Length: 80
Image (tube, rainbow, N blue to C red):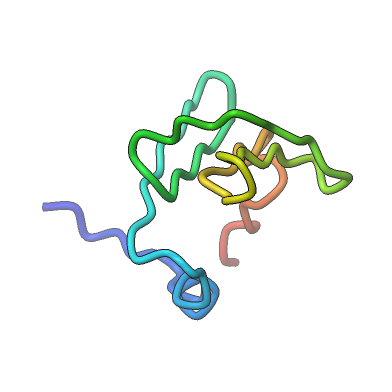
């Protein structure tokens, strides 16, 4: 049995999203986190913003976000 725990401080941010479902996929080799708000995304436009993330749209609706270098950018230092 895996007894690891996760930091749940992200839950309020997740609940603020205007989506009832969020799918995630992490590519460890590329260190990229993919978040999808609709399946299938069927995005017809993608924009890389100054924050380094790529936002995917179907018309004007946000359907996904790609977060490059996710572990490098967002992983907290292990507790001491």
